[in-house]
Length: 420
Image (cartoon, rainbow, N blue to C red; front, top):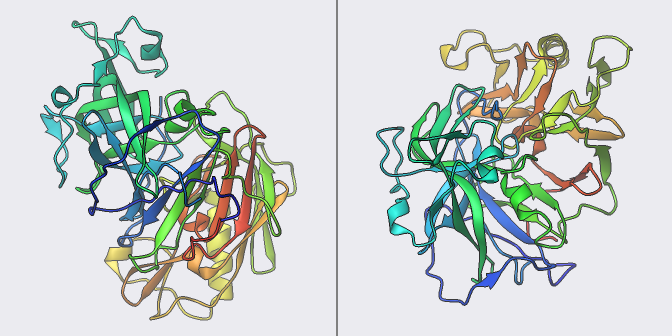
């Protein structure tokens, strides 16, 4: 690694080693990283939209991809209790299913029991922390109850609380983050699978993990390098936090983050998309585009475009692919798919962000939902604001510098995540 102080957090899925090291506190000048695990590709592209409302001392938080999502491992409580939540840059709230859970979706692992943790404390509805989340309301017991809904129709309801979060370094050293605000969910429904124990909000709002970390690790910044979903499950992705996670060097392109009233999403400006050599303007014409018309979301697998642009992209892909699309497979719905044992050889797509052209190869744009079929990893929305999903983010080292307010992209084979 270029920086011996660069901390790396490794994400492990369902296999853990006991830790017997002395803990250290946050507020250091070193970063921490996580590894991500791919489990399987989805048949249909799930839409997890945002809520409406270095290998030395680095702390780690394991993360793995399952059914199109990356699961992040961290521990909460005293003693530490491991949870696996969707790593989601498109939402803020950190939450997990808690007992009692009378109306909850099925999960494989035990649920967190706050009564078994000596560091758990409910947030009073009189506390300013209760109002950091727009949906915090006062219960008869003076507890801060919350309701957090997602555009996918998933919802979590429960009690807002504070806990100790434990991250683990690659050397096995525990890093304790005390007083982290999270949701203890007692009523959780929606399109969750049984591997997902909640969501780890990594957005820009006040209660996200990123905002609560702040500059504790030398800077308010993080980066990720996601392996494509075709990758062998034994190969990890990586996410890094703090000083040392900056993306720089040859081949880096950067685009400004766009500040809006909604602080959660990481908004950027997409000018258009090229399919091969055919440029498609975001608005369908040469007129200026609205700033912040797209946001990057690790919790949504496909890239979601306004319908007009999406239809143009699909039409150009059809024109440039010699094969005929699959039309008679009910499992695939309206997705643009091709029957082929191997991924397509083209066309290349380019996302033209303001100041940054990001080239996408077929491994980033065509996803295999089942054997012998590859589908375009894009879908459409009636909204004017699109979402740059995690399929397209793969095989790029992407840095979110929240101090300089830029997002940087560096092409990288993320299956070789031993590089700094």
